[in-house]
Amino acid sequence: MGTTTPAGKLVFGIFASLAEFERDLIRELTIADLAAARARGRKGGRKFELSKAQVRLAQAAMAQRDTIVAALCQELSIARTTLYRYVSPKSVLRDNGLRVLNS
Image (cartoon, rainbow, N blue to C red):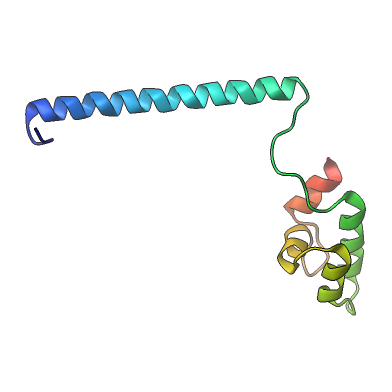
């Protein structure tokens, strides 16, 4: 029985509807669980690699033209990509840097 026959189309449609229902149910329960966790004071997500002080130090260092990025990364014990995830080369805070300072 393939999907070209009327019975095959019916079975395929039923399975598709069940899969969509299950997906919506899982999504609904996940959102409810996250809301309950937030109400208990729990935060989700990965921890930030840099502290507020480290973000401020990186921003100040990047504002100076003579800063050696490799040395700054070594001092902070992070990779270059991590540094640029928090602070731009022109010393502007990026999303992760702003989130650290606002947390």
